[in-house]
Length: 210
Image (cartoon, rainbow, N blue to C red; front, side):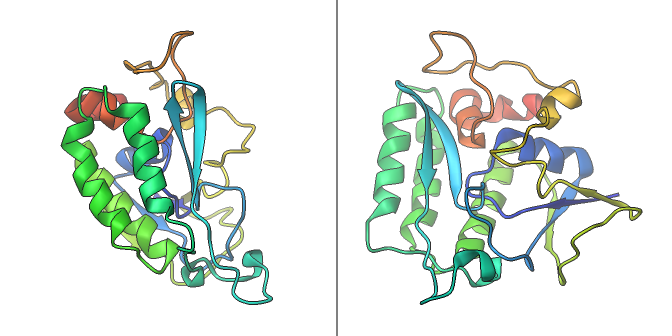
């Protein structure tokens, strides 16, 4: 069975657990862009609780972003959001055990100022997979199919979504367990970007994914 995922910016932990489970994934490259999703947003944990980091995207003149193919969505650099995101991660995770191991490679990709949101997400996902110790082939779709019902496809494009009402895949697969977090005075916080797991657990992250 093939796994189908949407493009995502520093995807949540369950995204990588799904790739590990299926041994690879196809990333949807032919859909139209969707707002308020993980395509240009990730969630980290700070001293003040959860914080969303959003990439501003170019609207393409008078066109609405939701009518533009995801592969054509450009990134808006009028504000220096890469530095802001790096500093936010530093404030949140500089005291975590493995922050220094990963932040330079992450920063290098963000500071390249990739023009395409899709290309940026793909580069980050492949880097993060290597950090997690997951050897998996990531392919791209060649056409858009709205419904894969009856086909041999695990379609999680809408399942892994900040507004999803369904339980996380980690919980469904019996893999949900807490890891140490810098800021968790009231207990473990779930539904975060993979960077939370990596900065806090390092090479041991794989044990939370498989």
